[in-house]
Image: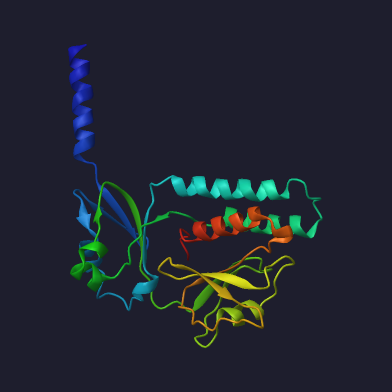
Length: 243
């Protein structure tokens, strides 16, 4: 029994000793045996690509709360669709939104701007990565924006610097029950903003390459549940791992 106890203790010690930080950088695997600053991870890549830092992101791949949030959103969608007939246009719109949310690749996005120079100069932008698994996505300047929500064909659309949220929203086919007055924009850095698209109150704010545009579900009968669902979907979309 004593030998068994010593064996278990030794295994525990060895397990703790080899605990590491694993970082997936654009599909390449890197392992660090001690906590490491983001700047040290970025240093070996900073000069190896023409990176567009606003669209570069880092995620904690171990966090489970984002998947829990996805399931909560799906539950909200199902609750709104429960009393609707399957062929009701509202039910069709909700089903389409459900499929989108189910298809998203998600991980917990860390609330930090990934930028090598900023990380070197500002400790707030240079977090210490602790034991666990991380996804670090470095990219050049994106040539697309991502449309989701009440669009008939969600996905990537060509980025055009002169186009406002109104132009993107009016240039593609929307589903019935798309809100006609506004869309949400999620910047590549994870900031959420709301933009008017009604012809009488257009927003002309410029969109950053790689942004997401979410066309919200129209609030029928002034239902607060729909507003809550739209907000929950947008907050979930911040944690999308985009191609």
